[in-house]
Length: 274
Ligand SMILES: [Fe+2]
Image 1 (spheres, rainbow, N blue to C red):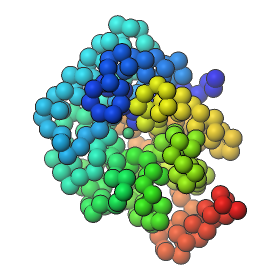
Image 2: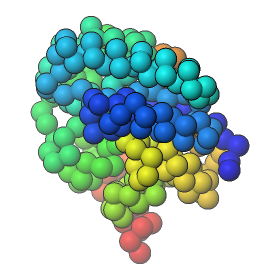
Image 3: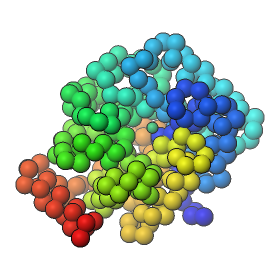
Image 4: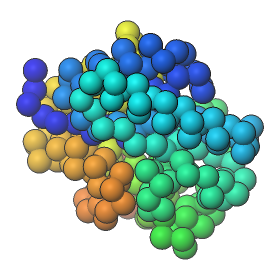
């Protein structure tokens, strides 16, 4: 096993809140798996949706405390923090007061996701509102939004506004198909990504082992310092609310202009379809 230490900012180990772990026992099995793989700090990111209200928020907080107590009692050597995967809606800023809105309640970073089928209006405005408040939004798994594959200029514009990018370990190893995999790999090659996370839901398929497998896949071509940023340094900084250094994205390949995007797409096709 690799000696790399991992910090994971995206997984669904809090039981009974979403499509992740269903019972406390499953939560503990997941966290045991993480500990065995040298994933030392895990942010809990239950889905927060339009249905989120005070009662749900109280349940998230209570569930997190219960899991922390159980992990301590079981002696599982992992550190846990609380956050959420916010499903994009125009109401998001109304949730600012919830203690899970920002990562570890640090008021510095949020993790949000978009619908899988269509790019909604108002994403740029949400990023702008976050930046006004000194919060850096992190977009979860953009490689999985197929509509963005044809609108990478939109994603680049979000990045230019100050949004960071988290890709899924499962995308890198092909769990979501070749198209998604190719784009995820391209993001890494172009250093147009800031976090790789497990998005683990259980122990068998969408699990923490996938995070390690994705690291091993990327280690075949990416330098270890950059991988350390993606899998350890940046996740840790995001949880701690510290600033993250962003690599410059090759302007000629991925610039503002339509032409740049076209060239980038051509390169992408050449790399993976020739
Ligand atoms: Fe997720």
